[in-house]
Image (cartoon, rainbow, N blue to C red; front, top):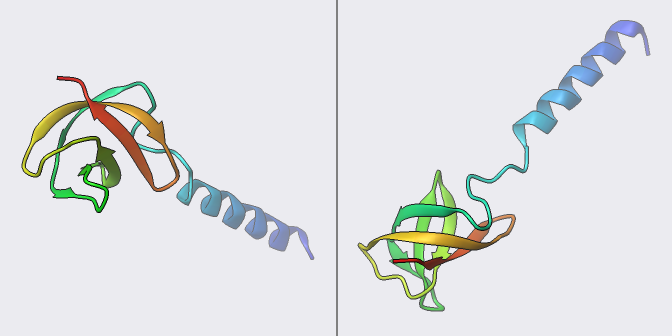
Length: 83
């Protein structure tokens, strides 16, 4: 592998790692105002923050509610209403 090929490989690896970063739009302990659009099979409200799913304990469809995030996973977060 020549110098030019090594540089291209490094640039591609950096671009891929930036594109698939693991940052989430919500954090444990923080509060967010959300709008519940659906109910899960377990009966929790489903809301989204920047497309990221949040399950809201005892949430109701078409409800605007302030929540506190309790847990953040890879694909969703759980929260409880605080009002």
